[in-house]
Image (cartoon, rainbow, N blue to C red; front, side, top):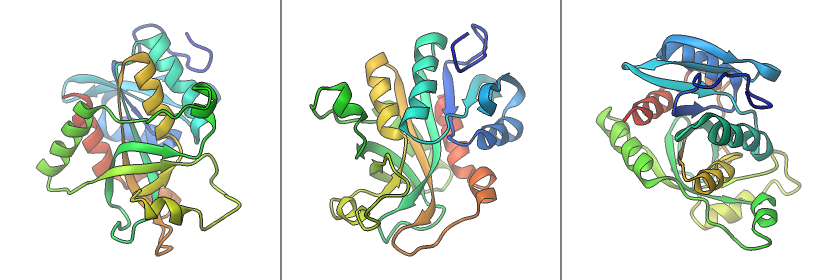
Length: 234
């Protein structure tokens, strides 16, 4: 048992979905997994293991932001042998062509976080998705008639920034959307030689100021969930 996850050895599958919201983890487990079993509720960050199409899959909440996700992903990779980790989260669009509820596959993750600057002694690491997961997710989404957008996302350390217009610089260089965890997930996957991917649903737009409700963010973004599950078991 690790410090923050109460699962016993063998209770977590090699393939795992990582929503930031623990209630999204609960929703996925109860609506998509067969025979889901709660293996951890430490700090109300819920984790479940069940089966999807006959294959074991886990789903673990991570909380919001790089520091929180880093705790759970380190422990999942190091202590529980997770091999494939797929973040399923929400993001704010910073390109006009991205609409509410669009599906985004994060090929890479730029960041304003100091975590990797500290980790690499001021050098710059390029956090990148696992190509095999990215390719599989894209194909699975297309097979269902969905057209995901693929590209760079911005992993921000601050939700409430001092400069509310700073997203426009990232947008100028082609970044698709802003979220808060992917740079750390991809970096840790590289460190531990594991596979990782972030699949996002656009929940709001910094361009048009449209947004979805908290309830929608927990339960309505099923295209993202299905794509992640199909990818996890492939």
